Image (cartoon, rainbow, N blue to C red; front, side, top):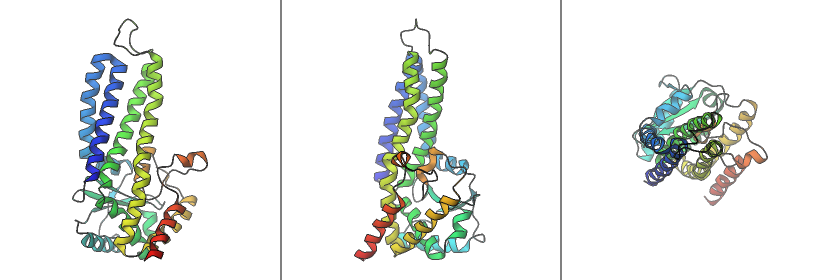
Length: 284
């Protein structure tokens, strides 16, 4: 249930942030509008975040006959974990990646690209799917899906502030109005806040899903082999429709990063993840 607690704290903090920004933008009236907007946003993020994420990436329901080996693996692992089988989706991309989304094990979905299904063998697919099912078991999917939705919403709010600053904000005679420089500062800070929220949750949850997934499928080397192959392949063919708001959901970061940009990656390095899995393998 930790995922629910983290999500509740996150929603409260972001609601307060949006209300503050509403006050800066439009005084008491703006604060009221921001409160109503944040309530609608929070409800939408909780209830529909998985549908929004799947729609962003044009995911289509995957039929059993299209990928029988995938369905067989997910059925086996779901039964072993004692949870309902998640709905499966296919992303229309030759890149190799995957993600899990939803609220809980009873409302979970796993999406895979065409590329990953064709690239990996059965054992490697089992390692990947065990990793994604571990996100479901750890209740990571609720927090991650909500963050993806809220990151997009924060970017929208930032755009509103940028337009407001260009037009000079509210009348200087209105004491409740925000100063244009304050509005511009908030417009710059909002996307940074969204990025920090993603960074705060993403790296640790990947390590946790790697470890639990390795135990679920019974062999850490399945995921090790998959990560090596996926890392090499993604450098040749990255996910073209990747967006920063949903980057933290994926098995591998769909946004390339080197040097300074790697410090702000939503994922730990592949080398670190493989090293931890190899330590598990040696420990038996």
